[in-house]
Image (cartoon, rainbow, N blue to C red; front, side, top):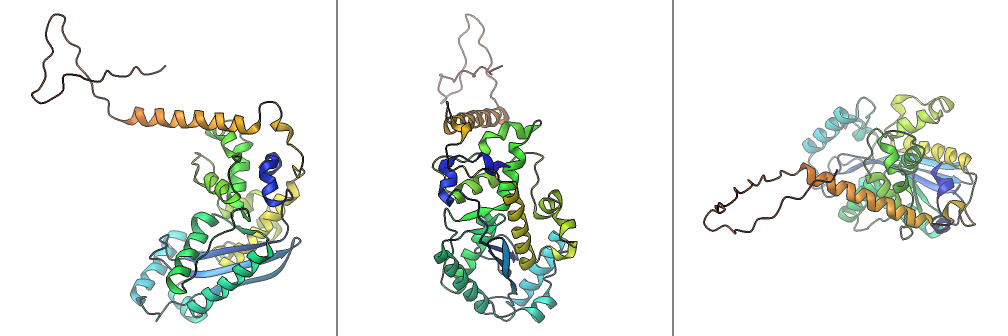
Length: 321
């Protein structure tokens, strides 16, 4: 478990002890544009000392809302069914029958999130900074003149932790080359670190919610049915189960200096690995560009040049072996 290897300067940002009280949240939406798309469902699970004490899911009925065309919303909801599959239940008739005023729903969650922030306890999501928080920020700003940001050191991403753990434990394949890049930088906040992990592309590493549940045996343990997924409230509950699974695998709080940091510090090692990674990526980009073949001049013969072109040409760089 990657959490056991996090350096002490990183674990200090959340008090060293992996949380057991948290607010897990999830959203479902019509698309990925925070400027144009709409949140259709928001769900949460409040966890106190490892126990879920409150769970709720609210569907937002945008039909008839000023500026939202019914035909556009019909198309978006039906299109999501094709993208997500049969698990997508937010079809037009469901939204009309079960949904409430979107403004009322957004204001409720704005107050809930602000109240939670005042408690100083963490938020939990999957792809939260890259998806859920971004969509909440867009809808809050457009419709209730509010904003939303995750606390920089008060957020845990289940997908990023799982992904980093898989790569950290890799013994073969492409993932081995990314192991140390999964460790936090000294200057990173929790939000920055998890966002970087999410955006690091590693072939062969999958980390969707259903896959994580299956890998940890949580589908059998909680008798999860496929049709239950892609509901914001149920997905938020799944995040709670995953966080408890992470907690059961943590055996070091890292209050003291991590032994892995002795001698050549972990940070220096991470920086070196990242430097190598950047050099490799730059070399790959250069190899994919079209190289201009320069004809070698015949000895004793002047080089011909076209009018208007500089007679000085860049020498072709020798490709490293």
